[in-house]
Image 1: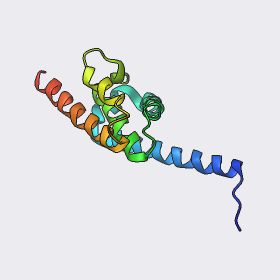
Image 2 (image 1 turned 60 degrees about the vertical axis):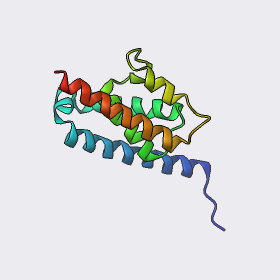
Image 3 (image 1 turned 90 degrees about the vertical axis):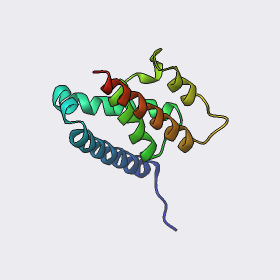
Length: 123
């Protein structure tokens, strides 16, 4: 029987998080080049970490869920979850009883993309 020690599990988890962060850096660089250029890689990395931490607080632990949350943080602001102009975000994020985390992140993402498109059209 193979036994994985706690230190080994932590090392594996850390490596997985680093890979996720690198993938998100590449995603932001590719799909949001202006923001990436304006912020610089160090700040983008910091915002990605911040977004992942916040996503986890809302129960989003899967890579896809965290990635969608981070993208919304780049589109709507890193603290969009507390933005009084976006009451729908807090409502969706705290609706843990009636839907799964996948359903919540999908609903949040749909609303967030619509909000971002509306903001862009108003410019």
